[in-house]
Length: 337
Image (cartoon, rainbow, N blue to C red):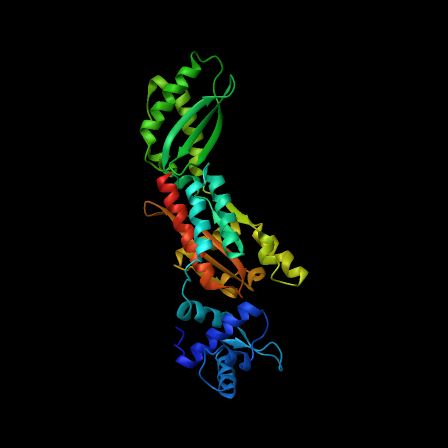
């Protein structure tokens, strides 16, 4: 466990982080003194900054340069110093207006929400959709798409749609009527259950065979699909924070790896983390990045997550506030429909 810094070192570390976020250049003792946040002489501040460097909170890129925060310094700042800043009035109005007017299916909502979060923070945004097997069933419909194929459509309470095509025997009498009856039966039996609970549903009705058994197989394929879809918006924003072309390329390649990014976000939530900084992320290409996330919920049940990724030199109070408010907005919108 990290020891608490005394008041003066805490104030100096806060000032270094705040100034470095604004200026993107090493910060010297005279700059800290000029902020008025630390009541001490430049010499004393310089001494304390050297001490903070020895303790691993700051580093000095060059002998003659000022200092910059380390991962440990950012971590202390996030855990002990900073707190989410209230969104500005224009940002709050933008957020409120968005959720007052946004419509459409879940995929459209999440894509639009991803764009909103990126706009609010000026960081790259990442949003995961609920995996199909966690979606609560609202309605099931089975429709004919040809003489030999049908499609089962599961409508989730969150507005999502899961589809699976399956083959039906040729020559079935009154196929369309059978499918209407089957749709009504499946909806009544499965409504309120999650897609992942389909296997536990006892679906038996001889009057609906053989199509019922074929539909059950298709539903099982939907149930077994646990891949969460990832929406990444404005990937160039995190890349633009770095000058080295090879670093930019590796960051962009990482963001294209959907399974990796989703697993990172899941891992953070399991650990109870909202912020992962630098090497804490555990991915070499993101060692100079930070990830700020929050879950979004439906009726107290976590169904997905939303966040931003940027350089470790990030405005953490803004990122935390925006991510928190947008995640709550998604949850409310999904519940209220």
